[in-house]
Length: 355
Image 1 (cartoon, rainbow, N blue to C red):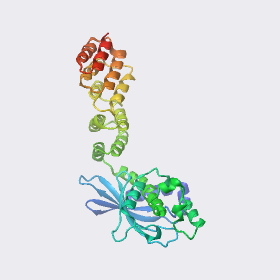
Image 2: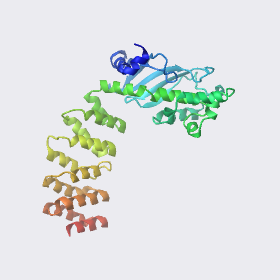
Image 3: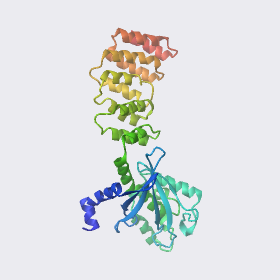
């Protein structure tokens, strides 16, 4: 079976993942090396070759970053000096940064060395996973060469403005090639490898992260666990206190999915109204859509209002209480406390509620 047959059947993809996850050899106490079979994005139809990808662990023994060292051409005519570079990704396969030997700086048109600004611009380009560089084949640049063979820089000068803005000036080839190394097939394999080795402790570590990407990864992995471990449930409540709206939405789905104690879960949610702009309206909307809610929850919600500073959260909570528990004496007693608020808008709204 040849390479093309493997790619057609999908077996080749399976082979890549198998090589990545199984053929691991310990390099040192803090890293592991994997042999990954990759194609050259500039020459995708050539034979796939093995590359050594190293996974570095942090001080807690959790996956921290991946790195890959490359030695590649930087121009189609192969008249430029090859480029030596080491690319780094985080544990989720997101490009982080690059390193290069000081004695081998990157070069561009006419063999001029990159400036500090060029390196910063290249780093910005590689961080953009949705760059238009991913939508244009290298053949696009090859055509620019054929239009004016006398000018090596034709690849840059003849590109549309949109392409010009997406590359380092006079280094379009380098920009295109490195972007595809950083954002092409590799990130998916790195993510799958992290998934294959992640433990419950690592998931808890991700849920504690200040990086929302890792929190989202942890939530998505935890969502596949049944039943939900209490330690994960507590982390979800923590995310509702501190996370952004997208992650709070996932956390809310997890804690409300078949809880062990519905009353306790509802009281925990009410306690977080007004605590975080990313979750307050999600929690209020959750209760609004519930057909049946224990009366004690409405009482807790009314009592919570005295601790909420956001007028919008107070306003929407009062609207919900009016519809669902407006005649409850316990609820009305708690709302009455808002009449003495220093905020006249809140005071007047409380009076309207009681009227």
